[in-house]
Length: 489
Image 1 (cartoon, rainbow, N blue to C red):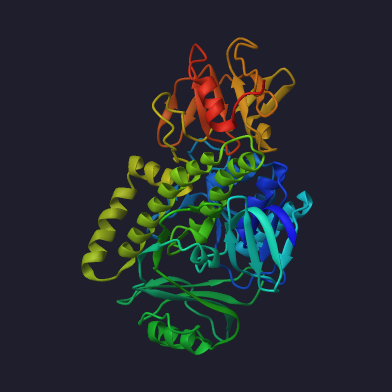
Image 2 (image 1 turned 90 degrees about the vertical axis):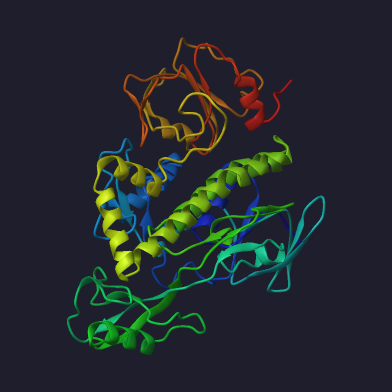
């Protein structure tokens, strides 16, 4: 029987990111992926939000994605009619990156390949049994793997979630959309349009003669896989012609089904990404929060496997990430409601559009959609506590450095902005970096504004602030112990 510290079911963006995080921490991790090759059929997710790009910058790979994508200066909340400008936000990634999931997975796959993560392809997790010491993971090829933990990153139909008996509560679909990439014999009507049924869009696929269509179905479609005939008939009903659509590369469907796992953990089995939450793709948030699930979970799981931290540290994964997905479920449900084309919904749409043209609502919604406003409840105190650490231009004894560079190896860092060597982390120097640094600029947070400059901050491997020092070290020992285990000696 093969053995690994952690087995990840699913090699999509969430599974790949989690594998990279664990491998950086020195954990023996393997991915089990049903696809025989890394190639992905269809477009699926279409881009990255600012906070996800920052997370990738924290690991030193953000530029790989930016070089492959297209920058857009706005995010969309409920309609293409009201793009919300993000260019005035205090982040190096003050844009949305257009990049299809197939390319995102390829770049992540190259990264985990460089790290040496093994991927068992053309193989599925079919079930598992667990005991106090570990999990026996059954595979579709008849083999099994023994691991300390199993993480289900295997999508909305997650076998791991079902086998764990975790409830997937939420709302059944009420609407469906067809999405396809194909050839057309005649010039279509480019862009967006609406009718009494819903919204439609036809666009060009870059560097090809193909088109991509997104079409609201007149009847809820969930019973069977969509066909070219379905696409043709929906086009004809909306436009009066199907524009001679032919030779599809792929055809897919999505719905407004909205569900979330009741718990993200059952003993030694955890969930992340779509296995933990599904929702319609409006706003392009699903892949992004899945990647961020992985970055929240990875360092915590690594510390538990290494016995640096107690098993109870994993409870903070549920506590921090479940509310994030719940908020996304809520705002995507609002997206769908605002996209309806009856007279009352149109009136609401117009009111919300007027609201979002105002600066303060724009800033709040951009911060929410981009993930830059995320705040974990780590207690009362400085406004930085529980929020993302800005990527400051620091001055250190070794020269200038961007703060995110200190997180490339997924290690926590204690930044001291006061007198050198003022902050003592004896007992944790084997696992926490200590850096004396200077910073002269303003401390500005998205949707909040300027905040007081701290004397010191403790930054977790996921880039969130776990402790803020004012004049003394009050609370630092407790924060170090809570997040990074008991001191040595």
